[in-house]
Amino acid sequence: MGRRWLLWTVAILAFAADQGSKAWVRENLALYESWAPIPALARYFTFTHVTNTGIAFGLFREWGSVLVAVAVVVIAFLLLYARQLATARWPIQVALGLQLGGAFGNLLDRLRFGFVTDFLDFKFWPVFNLADSAIVVGMVLLLLFLEEDKARAPAASPPPEDPGQNP
Image (tube, rainbow, N blue to C red; front, top):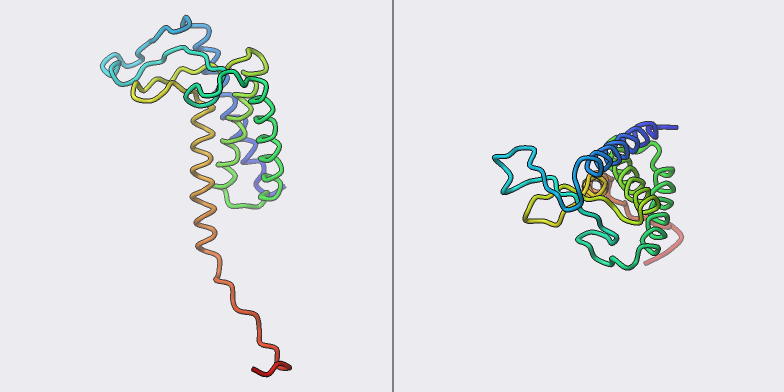
């Protein structure tokens, strides 16, 4: 089983945080309503309840069913990749767990509601949610640590010379 327990623990925590935060927003904020948890920072950050049928930044809003299919393919790829990395270092397990938890969170929203609930509004960036954050942070971590592993790997040595060949 290797470190897969870590991957699944992170995935479940990311999924639960995402679904819990979205449920809170849907129950406590009307659509398009904003709330400033820190009033002094309201110019920079609020919770703003919006929905998104597309992907990041509201792109491809009319592609709902295609996005569900893409999410299923991405999740299947991550699950297969996770099996190959069952003994990988813990940061890679965390990265894959974040991606899986986020992907499952947004997929569940699309299947249940036909849209994703977004609410993190930093004013200078499109509104997003914890699943989006988990996916992006997971991708960045994965890229960083896979590059680090690549840099750590010993350089490939040239093949031994064949004594039967004359130059």
